[in-house]
Length: 217
Image (cartoon, rainbow, N blue to C red; front, side):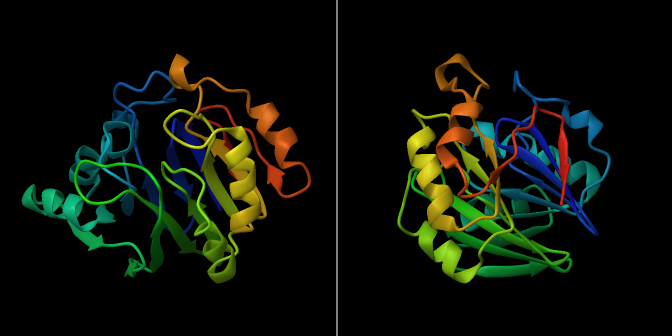
């Protein structure tokens, strides 16, 4: 499977299905591309409705015919615009197009519905995208139930975990590999990912990507 960091918290998963998570591209100074570069998608997953996560999700779904998988309240909004939807809530699991999506707890705020993280099972791999969150003991349940192969963890501080909490989150969720996200998009969330890597140490393999770079596993 190939995973690509598109900038901020936006990622692309490319395996037997093409999945975009939190595709904030328009107005994202760190984005490696605009939404016009996306020509195909099977699923678009949105962790919460803040603009830097909902982003271009609706236009991408309308363009590609992708199904949006998200918290119930956002799904209602999408359905009203004619978008194929799979609404869900924290603690639930949805299977769409052969992909399993589990919605897990996140500590943050949201305008409609609750913020969430997601665990995705695709092609025999398990990927955890924490969304925007503070550190929570619930991440230990991610380890117990899913033991992710790869996780996307926010490290930018102020609106999410900073480096110290994010490193503890890596330990809690039991991930084997981690890609830091949600940092250096704006001056207010500027941090050094190498400091995060050093803090994680031998707990997991830290993969630092630049926007547009991919990792295969």
